[in-house]
Image 1 (tube, helix red, strand yellow):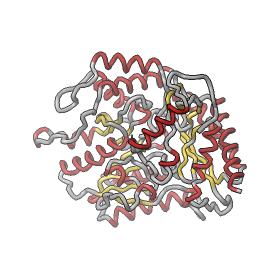
Image 2: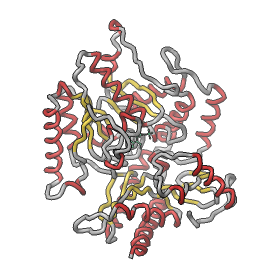
Image 3: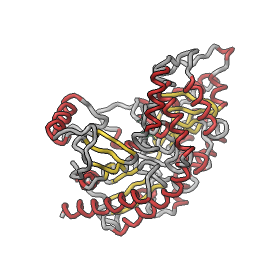
Image 4: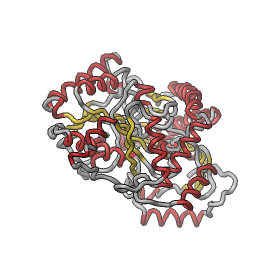
Length: 469
Ligand code: PLP
């Protein structure tokens, strides 16, 4: 726990009250990704307040949250305008069924807004509860589309190792992180295939970036062939920049080349922009603006509401809509959630987008992002820092035992966690993923806050290294 005491806040509790919260949480709350051996001892850090880029725990310790919640705090925490809009919408209409033939005003307006923001022919929006359900919806909609147009054998999905697409059954099966596929869980494997990770730092040894991209593209083509050709392959799914898999920037043009092959062979391209959407890379969506790809489907969530309320969306093409909606065939969309197009979540998302626009936050990211990267790169002088990578406000530092050989620390050392514990104690939250410290700070991050992150992380890495000696 942090020792960064600051002014009391309303939700502040005594040490005993805090312990009581930790105990009830430990006894009754199963956390996403809870690690059963360490959790009983460590418990969870109870967070009680958030403003902008900062959070406070129940004992009043203040932290700069460089993780932005979980890649989702784009406009900053605790905004009055958001509280007002949410309260007004609750008073006006707190819920309405989205099923079949009923809608609500915020859902209709948000669907139109997303169609306007998304690339060219992506004019149709299906609302979900978050990112996983958006990916699941994409998976099912692609299947439906191919069935409706008589291509019932076009069923295989191609993904990549190290990908993360969420944790519903299909989304987790589409994901390709080794740690996410332990043998005590089951996964769908008959129609889902994983190609190599595009992580050049880890897997590009002996190759130029161009050669690495060539290898990945050739692997994609070979996989399509192996599966029986394009008539058997439904879709390729990729995050523009892999997030949870270690902030992996694709080698130049690799994604675009795969998209071109997909386009030429009637294979759908699903761009999972759950993290990259809504400004994290200084653009509404990275697919077209950063990577020159116009996908058939974009999945998004997180920054869509900046985490104020749960919501996700699948934004999809005119062609897919036409394919699934032919009235004379008797088709209907047998898919949907009670909370699809939830009026309060949609009102929050609309306000969030308005704030991103009015405060020119994307422009701000295009300024502060390169500055943050530049400062983070100064950490490369540390012995333990093997790589610093990312773009704008989506970054990570990879810690290594040996810089020359890129040898990792043993996994059981959990070096990322050791560094993040040191950072916690100095009032900085960074996300440990084995040998990585991942960051996706709020998009309203100032340059001073960026400096604080870099200087604190430097000290945390040095201190963790010292303690290992
Ligand atoms: N897709 C990507 C790229 C993600 O990073 C995530 C979550 O981190 C998801 C999907 C799943 O989103 P959610 O946790 O909202 O279901």
